[in-house]
Image (cartoon, rainbow, N blue to C red; front, top):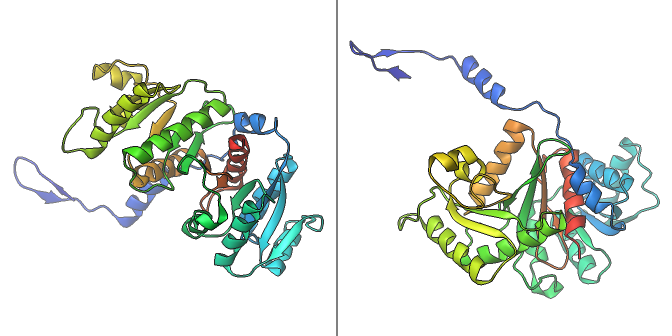
Length: 328
């Protein structure tokens, strides 16, 4: 690193150890906890048949066990039978009363899950130790008839503590670079989800890198159009954009910049311009803040629980609860 002074530049050596310590201090050691509000709403519904896709690893199995204990699901395990039974034994879980469908190939476990859903044998698809793109590619095939009237989209329900009011972020996992038409589907899906968790008229910020409409920033143009369409269609939500992240969630920032509307500084939902924005924002909240990220794909005939393969068990349980909430 070079520091410039009035006389002459000089070098300051920063050791790799110091940099490593700085990075470590940014990472949160807070224990992730499943929020009560999702569980309370989910408990109002009966437990449902759910398929665990490519089960047999400890984290998917633990989340399934937790969901069983909460009376949320009746699981069907798909994967390598020996691996599933071995994992269950290691976790001291009696799996004998539940169905196991033997399928050792990862790609084929997605096919089994999609077929079960198409035959109405399950109401919920839960991602196990499988790549998201492999699972979703199969589910989106028209032969299974799992597509709904709305385009599918992903919702993150973010909380820090058990009784927090959530921050909803969409879409940070499924639609990579959505256009205005797709964003309108994402908007309608998230309004429906918010209604189900008790937010009757959500405040939704259409996010951009700026709060100004600029020809050079496509997301700001999209945000303006979405705001106008939401008013035209009389959607049951306060929708406004473009808004930058700071003036979406901080009233102080909105006030300093002179932004006055119902959404600025108090957004319930951040509708992000792209997959990268949403995914990065969510991962920062998880690793820097210890946030619980409950992730679910909605808009289809069957909700799909999508979590990272490295997510902790409480986040996986929260995701299952979110999917139960999303069920018709």
